[in-house]
Amino acid sequence: MNGKLIVIEGGDGSGKATQAKLLVDYFKKEHISAQTISFPRYQDSFYGKLVGRFLKGELGKLEEVSPYIAALMYALDRKDARDEIVQWLTEGSVVIADRYVTSNLAHQAAKLSEEKQEGIISWIEEMEYEVNKMPRPDIVIYLHVPPSYSIELISIEAADIAENKLHQQNTENVYKRLATSNSMWHTIECVQNGKLRTIPEIHTELLHILRTKLL
Image (cartoon, rainbow, N blue to C red):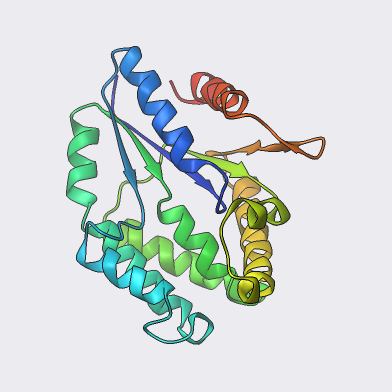
């Protein structure tokens, strides 16, 4: 089969890394070449380390750094991995990305008022896809976990909870808008009837989407 780029998106604690690993295992059992990559690459790239410093507040308070500057750091980290991703796709591998350009869109737009969000979304897409020549995803799987559950699933300082909740809510709103306005996006609801679904349940639904929409 031709190479395919599958992106898994979702908030903190949504299980992106777990589902990416399960997908790689599935493809290998089916004798299909599969590779995985996760962004940001905090330890593996020059710009990934810079993103890590940014998130720790070493470059200034997060809310004081322009989302355009923040987007640039994430994009440069990704650009460093572009040739490897392109090579995998050219060789016919399925590439599973735990976060991608789509994450940059959601998280940076969430920092701006709604009337300014479309502007930064268009700017990031132009930078990443047109200027940096990043491959476009064939499909995006959005693992939706309500922010109230995400807070419980991650370790966070009490003083940061209110600010984190607000950003997660804003980010969720952008993710939902992206998911409903792009046909290549597919949402998996990870919470049903007030309870988190099991990892195998989510994996099964993810495979069903891929089989019907991509593979």
